[in-house]
Image 1 (cartoon, rainbow, N blue to C red):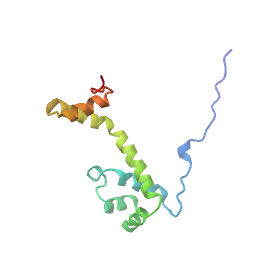
Image 2 (spheres, rainbow, N blue to C red):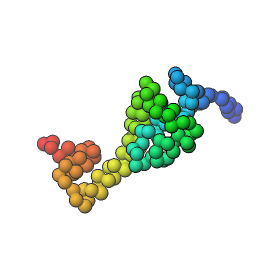
Image 3 (tube, rainbow, N blue to C red):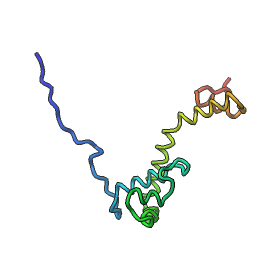
Image 4 (cartoon, helix red, strand yellow):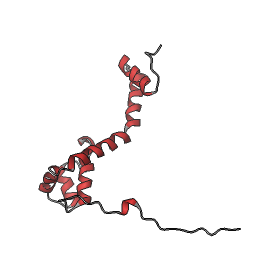
Length: 121
């Protein structure tokens, strides 16, 4: 009653090529939107000129890409993803603040995030 395991090759979603109208270097364009979405103090490379050199495009190309109609929606999406990735760190920072110099608003926010509403009766 041994059954033979059959392996079926399924295409991976990420294997499909993304097409963005009027952009020749799509991979670099998407990388730029993700890089741009990161707050400046955390960016690597540190500035737009260095980023252009790192991905092999002219800095003017990056300026042009900022005018592309899909640039800002992709930046917004990347920023949201970045923020979600850092929620635990922000909550940890809030916790540390409530341990050292808490304000009533800090404690209220911490309790609200924990699902406890101190205002309920």
